[in-house]
Amino acid sequence: WSPVPGSIGYNVTSSVPGTQPTQTSYEVTGLTPGQSVTLQVEAIGSGICGNSSAQQTCIAQSCPTLSVTPTPVNDICLNASTAPFDLQATVTGGNGSGSLTWSGSGIVDAAAGTFDPSQAAIGANTITATYTQGNCTASNTLTINVLQTPTANISAQSPICAGDAASGAAFGGSWRIH
View 1 (tube, helix red, strand yellow):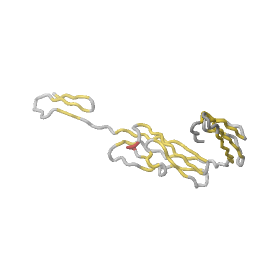
View 2 (spheres, rainbow, N blue to C red):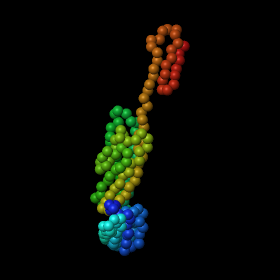
View 3 (cartoon, rainbow, N blue to C red):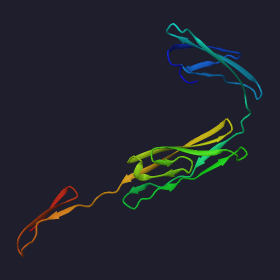
């Protein structure tokens, strides 16, 4: 649930035992399909307005076995001609009525799975593919390495006269010809 403005905490009552992993969530596990759980959340007020409560009944859904496998991507050398591209994944299980979304550094269109190397970090980028069918989800990650293309750099004195020594620098080092 969303935080309640002005509350200093929450009391949760459940028809089925569970845990409260965060201040604004409650988790019940081990349910069977069709089993219902009724939760009552009481927001404890800090002022004169007192407490507020709400109740919700949920019914456990039977989820099919789902898996999503992103297609690997070769390392990418970032340069001026590096273009965005759409990622691919294979989804197994379910009835195919779900949707695939993508997230992570460099994702510029979550629905299409468009990855733009120029928007990603240099180095390893962890991308998550998530398939959702009803209330059931499956996700998997993919690492895309974006490498900075090295820039060649060389300098030398000019002009060089025959018989004279010459020197210069290249790639952070130096050279000399006699």
